[in-house]
Length: 276
Ligand SMILES: [Zn+2]
Image: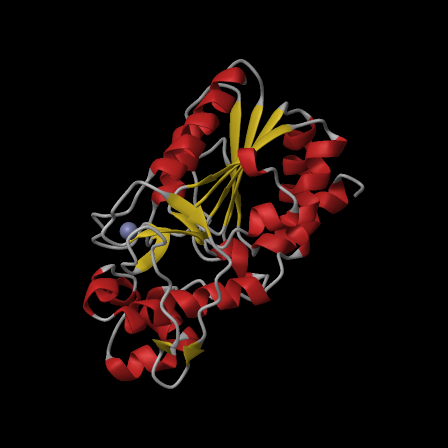
């Protein structure tokens, strides 16, 4: 089907909705110039040093490095933090915010992205559920307490070795601090911040249980399917339409809407049909 027709249909769904949920995966960041780590190749394109070391994404994103070799553990996360800080959220974030104002849509964002870009783009802090945590927050590696703190500590990384030149510390016990992000094989992630966001999200869904809800899913792949499953789960509610925007894996069951293109292109296309 022609994209134009799909965009027009989605525009109608948005106008007829009372609430909007954005579910976003790594593909949302691609138009901001961020890597989506798709497969080993995608990861190694972004991080050639790890290809030389024979380490894939799942192995790099493992909390064991922080304990065994903190400079190596922080090499990956320090570099990502710098990457996310230097990138700016693309125009699609503003387009979504415009819709919420223009159509008086109550909204919530649920994302597996840890870059904090929704808040930076102007989405309200209490309207974002960061399923896997945020790179802008830290916790103790041990952990000596349940404390999660916001941190703008910059961790410079030697790109030849991917080793951090500075290791953040826990202010309480001086042990190594780590990002408050859920990693692979992670048993010490403190989920409290994410749990509170989840609680607010469920409350939002309950408040809008009798109203038309549109779910716009952007760039959520099948590799780590958390976000896709969440969208599908929401799609099983009454009066709910899921719009799945995905360049490579757009499939979703009717009456939900599949949009086979990138995030920014889709958001612009839909916005044009809305006269934006
Ligand atoms: Zn500590």
